[in-house]
Image 1 (cartoon, rainbow, N blue to C red):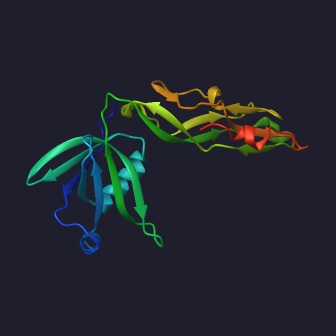
Image 2: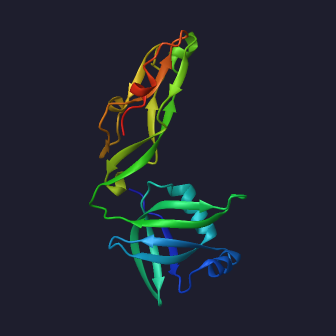
Image 3: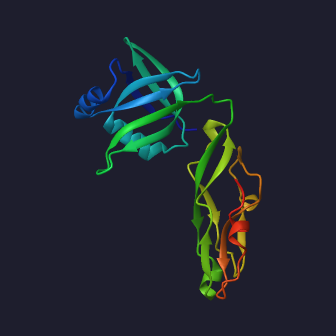
Length: 201
């Protein structure tokens, strides 16, 4: 297993809009660390380092948050829980980090990546995608960044349901109903009803 990414951060002594504006002018991004004890700790991180983390880790890869306070540094395994961008430009203006227990399962949403071209579309069918992400249960270190779904063998009128997915080791799909993820609609438009296709949590 490769070493986890480390993101240095410092505890913010001053909060508020004006203080955050000054931070951003210095190339720093305000953030909040929600630790395992339920505390919300205001932080500041270098924007350039945060951009690299977002690109490399996404929201399902555990990284080490190195928090410095009064000259003392502590490491915490975390997930990137949320990011906020400026509405008019692609620049990060805030981030939330979520401290995790590496021995406890989490429920998170993971995107699906559909692989291949369904053979039914070559016969005039249309591919309909009902879900682009699903909820999974997994320990933090086993969370996948995405789940690949092979659709090349789907013929006219055929689809894949959540129970059909091949999940990575240590990962379980979370669902109540065996809902449709994707289906090849026939040229005549025959398909399952929208209610049936979209049922599930």
